[in-house]
Length: 109
Image 1 (spheres, rainbow, N blue to C red):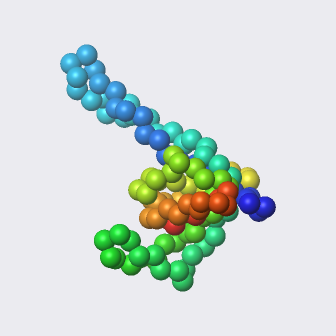
Image 2: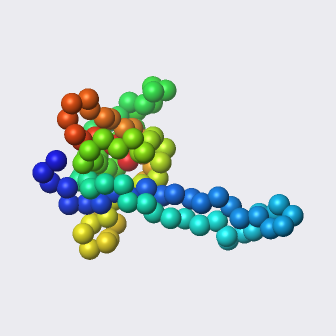
């Protein structure tokens, strides 16, 4: 992909921490963001996406990824960052689409 100004990050939640008796310690589970790839995040207000259960939704963002990334799945929480570090778009992945011969993938958030 020639134009990929944004960076895609995926939210990773570390397992909860337990005390010596096996009780979870509140506030100890950590949230981290792992960088996945370069991308282009576009606003999406007119394209409808039909889900596997038959419902039709209108996603907020259409994101084109640079390369096929197998670690991105439907339901993951992601965000796209601009070059200055501000958030361009974020949310749960509604639908993913990979291509067989071209080196890019599309996701709808």
